[in-house]
Length: 239
Ligand code: SAH
Image (cartoon, rainbow, N blue to C red; front, top):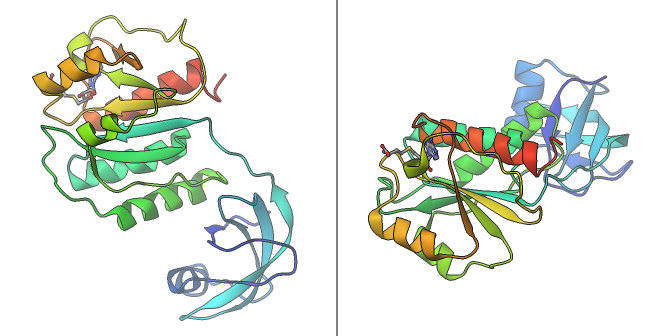
């Protein structure tokens, strides 16, 4: 079985060549020493995974042709991850782990105690793609641009419930028993936690469920992975 997996943002169908990006061509020829005729696996986030053959590959580009489907398209449950970006490496980590853990959409939010006013959306999206390539996923979660939490909540569709990781509840861990499935979003705060005004607003919203992630205060990146695991095990595709 071909080991190399590549995300290719083009429709995939048997016998229809698709172009490689420059970075992919360089990786295949320069790093992995692949040659025309060698096989790789490709996916585009929509059409499942395909076994594909390298037509031509050089430093600057190349193309592959899908031969036959190798795995069906598998979308994650309808779970979003909203999180306040922290330092660069830890923010990258959160996006990578969210893609591996099966988040359907990743939304960086600016909270009162968020330090960064800007994110590199394109770089974060590239991390989500890389995570999908290496974890065998056929889905790539879209990464949104940074949005203020207040604006996100103003336009929120109440049918989607929010699991709010509330550090003030740190204590005995909760199970999510009793909660219903359906569309959900997890909300994780920044290193400084949520402000008093944010807490008041979140507590007043009927679609928000505060949750404890155990007796210790976790760093935001740890909290994101822990909350995703808790949700996937109780309501998602770990069941
Ligand atoms: N500086 C804050 C902690 C922030 S931790 C304080 O000392 O209180 C960063 C984020 O991770 C929090 O905003 C929360 O969303 C989440 N988090 C960390 N530990 C948690 C816990 N035990 N229970 C619930 N959420 C937690």
